[in-house]
Length: 434
Image (cartoon, rainbow, N blue to C red):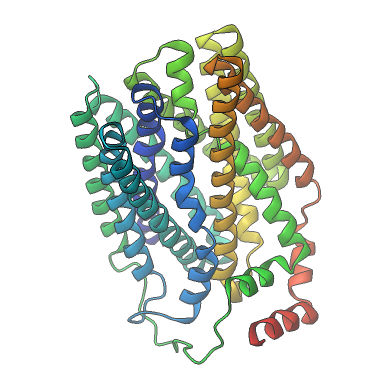
């Protein structure tokens, strides 16, 4: 079983690696060096997450329609290929915007869109496969291995990128993005070798085709699932919404180089990794919900320090905030992923995983766009870009507090009771046949 868990981890690593250059290097270069509007950068970075609703449809479709006897592998291959295609084109789009705005914008829409579509295809597919291969008892261990490998790869990728772009030149950055893309493609390919067994299950072509609205209604017809969906969106909008702004903030507020701001990701990742190790120990003693709560509290403290560091221009305080944000993110990630899998029914794995994946993507969309717009508006009104970042980080801290209040009302036992109610299942069936 460990071999399969390791291979699942490699696939998770491959997809995550393609995100690092965009979120830790390209966004900083576009905002600081190329002076492109943070709102536009945020919209491009979040454009992929507009496709998030397809995760529900992909997960449900794959549940019923294996390709060549494989339910998940074909979608993972397609998704990873699109991710690599997007990441290698993205820097070319950024530089083209400076010389030819229209052509650069079109290429940007193409590259970021390809990455986002690939992310949605791959994520729902390998998480569904992980759930199926692990079984209920093995899910926790599988998650731990996958996320441990992913965070380790983020740290290594960020360190490697910081060296490849030092000294910074457009050519160096493009070479670095190509290197990351090719390594990701190789690791993902290794992860897929003999991972999923072929099945002789019927493809279910005669089953009714459900619309996206009907599929989502099936999930959100459960009161606890609806609450968990809202909780995830708010929590992740806060924690992940800082992705496009943390590195530019370091450059604007403290004059950090591209190399040093890229390394912020490795510092954050190291703290997440440490928290992942601690979380497994804490969950057995405190429970998932309590660990999720303390993860949110620590992340809130991190945002508060980061915002305050911009006000008093104190770089050490900024690093302290990044460390706390990483620790809080790690604790929150493990506990909430475990809660997510607990709130997934065996008969509709792909459907529920798709819904939670959509919550993840939608929250990135909300957090990134909100962050970019608020940063630009505040900077324009107050004529101080740094205060724009400070306001964004403060808003994200408030969102974390709201998510912690919602967490109090999430009940796994109630979810399972509701999902077994014949009336709810009958309503979903009727909706699908209408």
